[in-house]
Image 1 (cartoon, protein in one colour):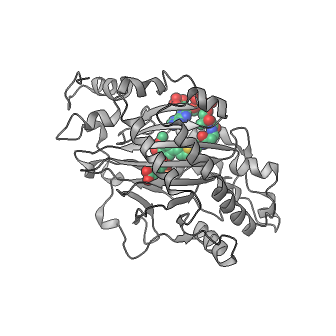
Image 2 (tube, helix red, strand yellow):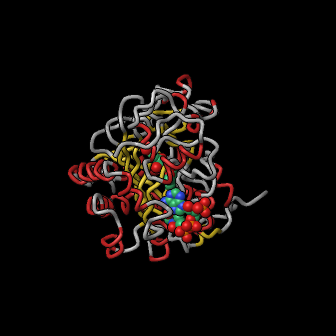
Image 3 (cartoon, protein in one colour):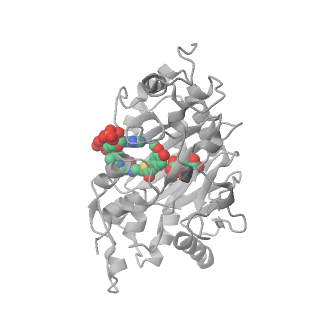
Length: 362
Ligand SMILES: COc1cc(/C=C/C(=O)SCCNC(=O)CCNC(=O)[C@H](O)C(C)(C)COP(=O)(O)OP(=O)(O)OC[C@H]2O[C@@H](n3cnc4c(N)ncnc43)[C@H](O)[C@@H]2OP(=O)(O)O)ccc1O
Ligand SMILES: O=C(O)CCC(=O)C(=O)O
Ligand SMILES: [Fe+2]
């Protein structure tokens, strides 16, 4: 269908209507062939990636999972989660075909006409657990982000069969289920260093009681240097398992000064793992959720598929008793996980700001 409006326009409500209400998203904007970025997407200078702040003499670890129980591999995983909060895994056991299929399904979903995708928007979706959207939290943001997404919260097989978009449902479920083994291996190893030797029912709920899969779409952008794909944030998950395509553009906060950033290079068949706020809180700060962000791209459409492994919404999260057993002082209080996540979603991206919600004030 031909777009009704040509952008840029000075009329903010026309842009909101086109991008958000009609479900065209930034993909729809991109496909108008704009020569300049609409002002709504222009980020403050401090939020854009400054090429001078990108460091190339350090990189996040790449860990071979084939011998995951080998103490040296387990050490590399725990060291990476403590020092970097981010690492890539290879030989993780999720078949390449499963990864390729979910990437294909992501392109298929975003290739649907706007009116079909819009059936899953906040205002039209048949369920809170299925949501198509754009940017991160448009109501709360001063500047929008150059990204569309589909977010799928797993409730049950039946709900997924009935409510998830047929264009991507089976492939997302296959990716989610295919990753379960490696997720359990990672959590088992990470817990062992915290003196948690058995993941019983309560721990299982806290560590992996709920799963959300997002499909992210970052279309070609006319002025990528003026905006962001995703602004600085840490995930609110326990662990995130991220599949990125071959384009690149994910940056993780480095250790060289206040504002240094490290690129996460795409490696075919690998998965990017990052510690989320929930694991930082459960480990009383031993494992760290690290700020990351995504740039926009002038010539290529990029996709990524994060699996957010989380506590259940109804879980209270706080430092684990095993971590405090040696007399360590808790840095975080007990918070209801769904309150924590609502706090995250109701504000714009703000780096590591969300975790303050759970901090014990000194
Ligand atoms: C989108 O761009 C992103 C996303 C991310 C995500 C990073 C993560 O780590 S996601 C993992 C989050 N954990 C969970 O989802 C598991 C626990 N889930 C829950 O506790 C609940 O399902 C809930 C998320 C709190 C929603 O519960 P519900 O009762 O339905 O609450 P609401 O009042 O409807 O929603 C609260 C508030 O959040 C907004 N919202 C809800 N879901 C999403 C979503 N999938 N994406 C974006 N925003 C969402 C909702 O609109 C409400 O806001 P209002 O302003 O409308 O009140 C990282 C980086 C990104 O760029
Ligand atoms: O697209 C990416 O590489 C990362 C996206 C991300 O950080 C997120 O969805 O939380
Ligand atoms: Fe993230």
